[in-house]
Image (cartoon, rainbow, N blue to C red; front, top):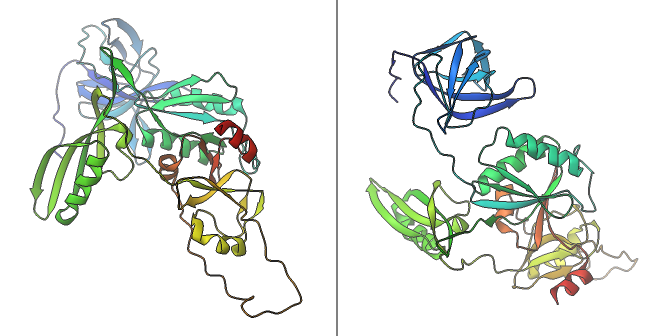
Length: 394
């Protein structure tokens, strides 16, 4: 990477990111394009709409390791954080106090995916989370908006639910994972693509997808992407590897991706095939036993370990057919004084499928939630009661 060129003249810095501190408020982050910025310096903030605001830099920070270090002065090429400037947005320019010259502003991509965030109302609510109420989650989402500019949060009509929109499943899953580590409990619904109507046509976000694979796998990758409505735009050989470029709907992106970024909205590409298998759902709450799991192994694959605590309505596996199946995994072996041949056979269980957060978000159906707590992650039906689910199904 070439070293930055020193550009002399009046200072210019485009604000490309922001941070937030509960002590100092919003912090502007960017790379100094030209000139020098100093602590205590008076500056002009050139807004995207052409307005000029007079302001002052209270503190200057540079980035070192994972943190920031205070400094007195930064010059052309330095990436820095400015404390004390008010009323800025991404795309504004920090300029000279007397002779302000704005840099071309940058645009922020609009959200393309939305998800329902809800308070945890499962039977295991509050077991290992510190922040579990709707007020806690609401305050945390509002705090996130201060530094996460591509995020949008809208309160749902129902209490304790929010529609959170972001730049894709990964953008939203990073927020969920951060909240989980901070001690929050919450539930999230299936990610939904944000459609728009442009000139009377239903349009959806299209991603520019780049995949680099060994040559022998290229045909498999092309087949997988075209099945998800992707269109190949470029293919080039680099030694024994192949670079593939596609345009594909955000709905089809999934997680097995090297690099993808928003390109534009295009007319809706039609239905994309999603998971066709049904879920295996726990019938009652209790401890899952190896004996019960062993007897049900031919019905599908499991997501739980023996001795895991489960509750009625929890998704504990994937059914081998397309319908949902309610099973009793809490059934233990009845002990008797009688010995019979074959009664003490060893149980041999296939290892369960363990999902990452992104896998689970991609996997769930429209009538399911992912329940996330600091120590565990479970999939469940939105309606836990089996009779109520049947009633709603009718």
